[in-house]
Image 1: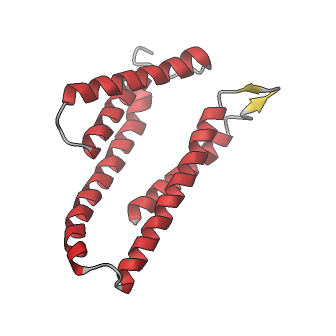
Image 2: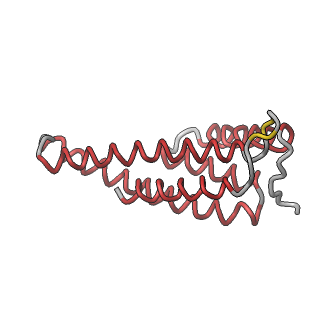
Length: 156
């Protein structure tokens, strides 16, 4: 549950900081603040849903509605889930620091790659790396080229 609270708080903080970027739409045109606000809003909604589901799940297991056999297998999955949650928190903290130090492209590619490896098996590493690079490349094109939002670069 601690992880869900953390994600909800970070999402709220992100949304609040997105408001400092200005109005998202001016004279029927999208401004650079539109997508950070949209992402922040969706992040708050989805993290709140996950938090509420976690509360409901904890309440159900507390009342005793879950079977003991399920609880034994759940303890293994909870350990894996907790490990993944801590790894994601650590990866996000490193990403936040690295973003301004080494730039958007490298920091984001490494972060996307790390998230994919954390949530899946370690097979097809090269394919996951390629997916991370393509995903970050598309994000770069969208923000730099389409919206004119300058992203931090390694060479600056």
